[in-house]
Image 1 (cartoon, rainbow, N blue to C red):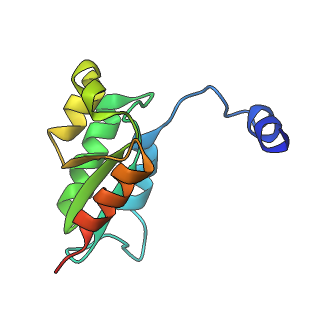
Image 2 (image 1 turned 90 degrees about the vertical axis):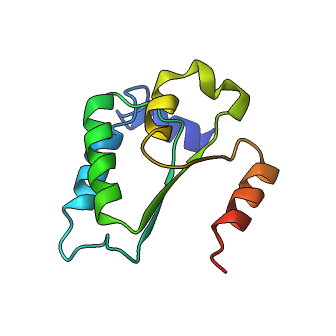
Image 3 (image 1 turned 180 degrees about the horizontal axis):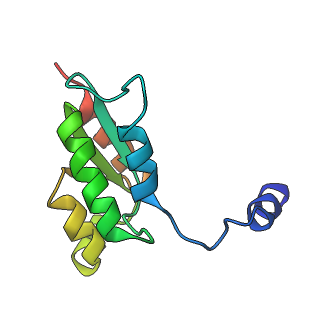
Length: 113
């Protein structure tokens, strides 16, 4: 309850995710944190308040990174009903992590031999 109240009183609860801004800031950090050796993991349901900005920023992050992998907590059988998932999955690989088992399987796939 303490954490829930803290989040509600923070002023950001219910305003949505601004993934575009977060990715833009990551892409412009100095010294650069993204490079060809970087694997960028994004954990999000793809729902964001400014999807066009998020798409532009994701494309830039993909350009700067070695690879980008999107971990999505929405069950994969529901992805076809969510336009933003389809959009982001067209840019980078999307992996289901809607359960602990799915997250563990996703992590095993990320291990580079």
